[in-house]
Length: 214
Image (cartoon, rainbow, N blue to C red; front, side, top):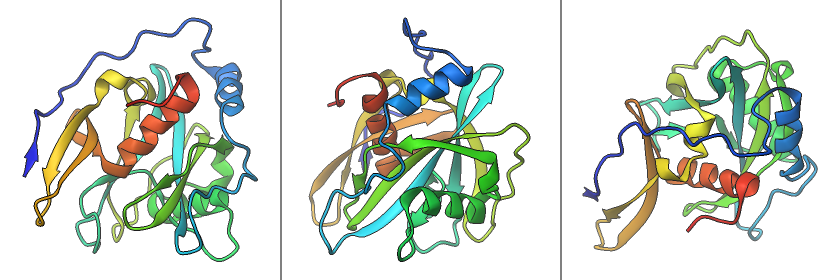
C-alpha cells in the first residue's frame, strides 16, 4: 500500500539569477557542473552491474524539456513505470555509448542527434545496478519512434518542473515483509515520476543548483 497524497501540477520554479535560460550559454553552464564523459561512472564493487540512462534535453519555446518513457506492460520488470531511456552496459562499453545505444533502441533517437555534455552522479539500485545518468541535448526535428516491446509511451516533461524540489513529495510503501520503504515522487499531468528515476533527477538538481537534497 502506498501512503501519501498524490502531487498535482505545481508552478515551476522562478528563474534563478545569473543562470542562463537557454542556448549555448545554458549548455556550457550545465556541462561545467557535470563529470566528463571519460569518468568511470561507478560507485560500487565488482559484483555490481554497470548501466546508463540518457537525460535527453530538448530546447522548446517554453524552455528545456526532458524526454521520458512509460515502460511497456509486456516487460518482466518495472512494467508501466516512467523511466529515462537506458539500460545495461555491454562489455567494454562506456556509459555515454550505452545511453545513446539504448535510447536509439527504445525510442528511435539517432545518436547523431544528441550532443552529450557530461555525466551526473551514478545511482546504485537495490538490485545492484550502478546507473550513470548521461546528459545530452537533442537536436530539433527528432520524432519519437518507440519500440513497442519496451516502451508504451514517449513524452516530455519541463526541465524546470523536474529541477524544482517543490515538485517532489516523499511517499512510503509497505513491502510484503512489513518493511517500510520511502521514496520520492513527482506527478506531471497524468504521469508519476518516482523511484530510481526521481532519485537520479533530484541528484542532477544537486549537481546543478546546490547541495544534496534530503
